[in-house]
Image (cartoon, rainbow, N blue to C red; front, side, top):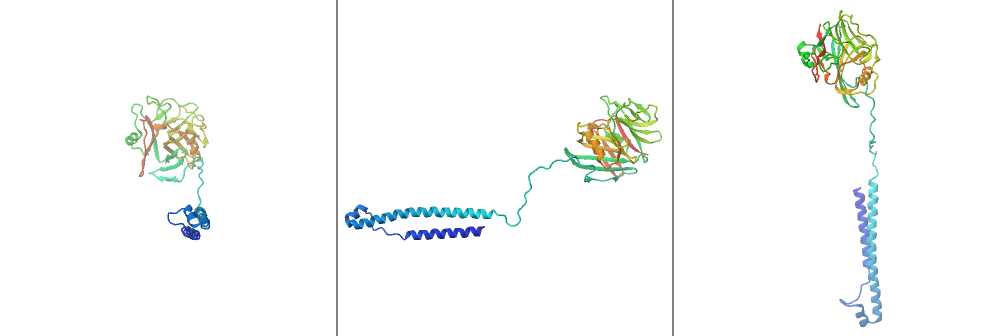
Length: 343
């Protein structure tokens, strides 16, 4: 581009020089220094005056031609400059691709788990842990899932409305391998539903709604939908905790179908199709209740039944077993928790 422009400039300068040389070859005016045309008429006569008139006309023509040449040279230079610019604007080689400035439409939250998945990690006898993170429409969702073989451990419901504690204190006092917050409670720290701790029952059972995680006299655990299988006071239950709502009914069907709702921290207890118990916590305010239920069904956790626990500021999950540790503490004091103890 620079070489072409330089060559054009030299051509323009040469053309201007040629025009100037041609114009400079004009008749010389024979007036004496300081004289006038009238002085010449008086001294030299009519012939000389006529010649002087011709020379004056030539002088005027010269001025006009000089201005015309100047304008022509300027126009020629501008024309060449515009041509050179247009040539430089032409692409050389393959053109550079420019991305289209269009937003990426948000899709539905990906099926769990997504790419950021620790996979199942052994955490002692009968316990595994899995940590899952994935991007959602409201931020990054983080979930911790503790999977427990109920034949390898012992479950205990801690209930103390007189001295509620944080989940971390519950765990440190009992030496639990794992712990999760329990069901709902009122302003006096009393459970709003049935609680059974070491055979001692407190509160009243939900009727026609909610769910219950229980341990029978033979150590068999169950997770039931109270609308389908109500609590019987004559049952021999060692431990039990009730909460609401049931997210996945036994058999893997969607139990909670309401749309909308508040996004909050979530705690869930579930059972998979192999009979293992899952403690699930999401400490980020990502899921609505329906969103949590949908995520569980879309996951590869093989959920058979799932019960929502008290979430929000009560959400907590602790694990300290087999070299694996997880610390999601509650923001409030908890009167009831579910503890996983060595057998």
